[in-house]
Structure formats: C-alpha cells, structure tokens
Length: 529
Image (cartoon, rainbow, N blue to C red; front, side):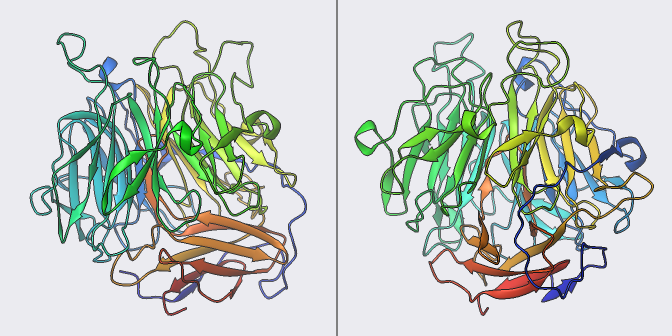
C-alpha cells in the first residue's frame, strides 16, 4: 500500500509549476505515439475460434508497488499472461512476462483489477468462457484463487462484461457479470443468450448468484450513479445479433430490494444496437455523465434529455462528431465495428478525448475489414475531431480491448491495444516530440484517492478539477469498456495552467475542501482531506 501523501514527479511541464491557474481555451494537436511493442518485449495474441470473436481485454494496474502499471492480457484459446513493468521513468516501454502467478489460465476473455477485501492490495477478476475466477492479491504481483475463500460462484457462462460498486453499509462490493451467447444454444433447446449475474455481499463473503434476465447477449456492463442520487445503477449494452427482441437495459440496484429494470413508464427509451462497449464521462459540463456506446455502424453518445429526474437519454453523437461509423483513412466505405471505448485527456490540454477500438468481428462481409482505431480529440466547444492519423496510431489490426495509461510515469497517457489473432500493440506517447526526444505536451496532475478502510480506492466518488471557472468532473468507476479495466491514479490535463484545485465527493455524499495542487504533482486525497 502506498505510504506517500504527495509525490512530485520530475517532468518538464509547460510553464512554472508555481504559476497561477490559466483556463484552457484552445485544443492542442494530437500527441505523437510510437510503437514500442517489439522493443518493450511484449509478444501476445488473443486467439481462438468463433467463441472468441468477442472479448480480448487487458487489465492495467500496479501490483509491484513502483507506481507504474503492469499489464494482464486475455488470451482466448492462448494462455493469459501477466507482464511486469520494468521500464524506467520517462523512458522507452519495457515489460517482462511473469510466470508462476497462477494467472496463466486459458479461455480468458478479459480482466478487471479491484480491491475486493479493502486490504490495500489489488485483486483481479478474470472473465472466461467457463468459470470466472477471482484472484486475491498477496503483494509483489502474487495472487491466490479466492472463489472458495469469498464464496464466489464463477458460473459456467461466456462472460465479457464486469462492473462493481459498494453499497452504503457493505464491506465487500456488489459484483455484476455480463454474459454473452449461450455456447450450447446452437445444438440444444436452450435460451440463445445467457442471463447476466449479480453477486451481492453477505458480510465478508458472497451470497448466491442473482440472475438478471432475460439475457440479451451482453458485452459490457457499468455501475454508474447516472443521476447522482447516491445509488449506482447498472447499465447494460447488448448485441442484437442473436436476439433481435433485446434492447439496452438500465437496472435499478438496491441492496434491500430485488433488481428492477427501468421501463418506458420511468422514461427509459427503446434502443437496439450491436452493443459492444460502454464509456462514460461528463462532456457537457453539467456534472452528469454522458454514455458512449460502441456499435456496428454508428456508435451512440447519450446525454440526459430532461435532467436527472428520469433516465431519458437523447443521442448527441452527430452534433458532437463521434459517430465513428466508417474508416477515416483508406477507400473503404462499409460500416465500422466498435469495441472498447475510453475517455481521457491524451494531449493534456484540459479537454477530454475519446479513444475507440475497432475491428471486424471476423470476416463479416457487410462491415469493413480495414478499420483503424479512432482517437477523437476534444475541442473547447465540446465537439471532437479525429486525430488518429496525425497521432500515428493507424493500423488495421482487429482490436478488441485497450487501455489508456501512463506506462512510464512521464505524465503522458500511453495506449495498449489487444488484437484478435495479431500481436498486442504498445503505443508510447511522446507528446510533441519524437521517439528519441519526447517532449511535454500540456500540464497535468494526477489524483489518487484513499477513502479509508472500506473501498479504499473510493469507487463511486466524484472528482472535480477546477482551473479558474473551468471544471472537469469524473466519476470513479470499475467496469465498462470491452473486457478491459484499469485501476490507478486519475489523470487530468491542465492545458497551460500551472496549478488547479481538486475536490472529491465521496460515495456517502460528503465532500473534501477544494485542495490546491501544482502541475506535475500527484495528489493523494484522503477522507480526512
């Protein structure tokens, strides 16, 4: 467990760290990414037949205690692998595969880091075609199987989605598993899609699984306090390919009552898509998160249409420039297929950006097979402009899961991509510089939470970063994406500002004071302020 209160990271930033706040007003150009995969020593593929067309995630988290994240890759039919970060701060990326951890499983579709027992050591939820396995972290990147210890029923489904939240009085999190196609449905008289599963804590262990059905072939789930009423509900995105009667679902989750799906009477609108992944972030500045849903064709960006009173969403993707419905390079015009999505600030200008992983399911003829991943650069007016080609990340791999994370602790977010039947890619962000001479791009801060003895990572909290009158709001969640999750400090770009103020609203609704932080600092915010 980290013992520092504030760490000043030795990096060049724009302007003096002691300078006052300067509100961001201009978007910066996309940063330059260089492919460090081979030099970093990472050789891994997500492989398999049709049962592994979906999935293919990566978990990014620090289990070695050096403040640089490790990477755990799903393998499908290949063996999943943990790569330990051995690179130097601000240097080229370098990883070594670690053997003998117990994480070397087959049939792995994805993974999510989480501190389930609140001991300050990160645990790992591993999703599989078959039994899901939860591993308790023992320190130093050691892990032990914990299904029996915590009475976790791993099931026997085809799982690609996961999320977690802490109830008000719970000492363990509620776990949600999103299940896909019933693999026996093609031969047996059974439901085509498996029901999702909710595991609720019973003290320091878990009760029996609670099915969330009917199953409509789920590929991503996310607990979010979408209306900021103090209780997280479960957003579910479903693939209509196998169940045309299915739709997107929002479950009301109450620790004292059975889960109930929102209905038309509640304001929930019918939406049927080939749902693959979920990402959320407040991009309109109203402190409520928008929801981005990847799709085959036009992905969706949903915003509350009538405020927080009811879950009535409208699609604002076109007006914001994030439909990502076809390739932005090349001459192919068939629709795209989106998978993992993630909001973050890759160029440190203060405006949130959006990464979207893409790739044909396999060889579906009505969808493009030359589908570069998107890097959409946020603009001051809340729109997005494609920056993938300028950033240098164009490839035609069939990407599934991904992660934006600062792999070398230089204040710039790097990019990890997991590809189907192709090697993973590690893209190093070198800012406005080159591979040999990286250069800073915008100022930044990192915020880490210590919420106390239960839920120490503060899942369910809200972080506000204020620069003058400009405020960025982020909900702290576990889940979403596509089979990919990460746990670690929260990165915020500041643009030209040399300082900012940070406020944390904890899951119980209490808030810290506004805390001053200088650019280039990592701030640890505790419940004591």
